[in-house]
Image (cartoon, rainbow, N blue to C red):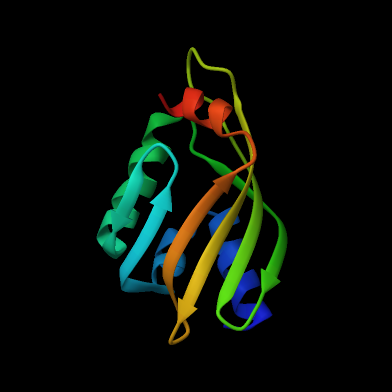
Amino acid sequence: MDRNQAMTIGEAMAEGRWTEVLAQVSPNVTAHIPAVGRVEGVDGLATFLLETGAKTDDGEHFELLDTLVGQHFVALYFRITAQRSGRTPLDNLTIHLARVEDDQIAEIWFHNFDSPAVAEFWA
C-alpha cells in the first residue's frame, strides 16, 4: 500500500465513507480495540463501527492529522471527536496502526492517547 492509498483511506474515514474503507480491508481482518478486545472479520468491524456511531449524538468525527507508510504497515493519526448525552465530549488523539498484506488491511490496532477518557466516554 502506498502513501496515496493510505491517505485515501484516511480521508474516506474522515468523510464517513465506510463502504470505501471496508473495501480496503481483508475479509479476515482482526481489529484490536481497547476496552473491547478483538473484533474479527470485515462484518465484525462494520458492526463495531455502526454500533459506536449509533451511541453518539451525531456520529464520530474523524480528522486525519498525519499518515505514515512503511513496507508492511500504515499508521493513520486522527483526532476523533464525538458528543454523547450526559458525557464529557470525546476529543481523542489516536493512531490506527494497520498491518497490510496483499494490498489490504489485514490487522488493525487502535492506540488512544488518553485511554481512560475514551473508556469513560464509551462506558
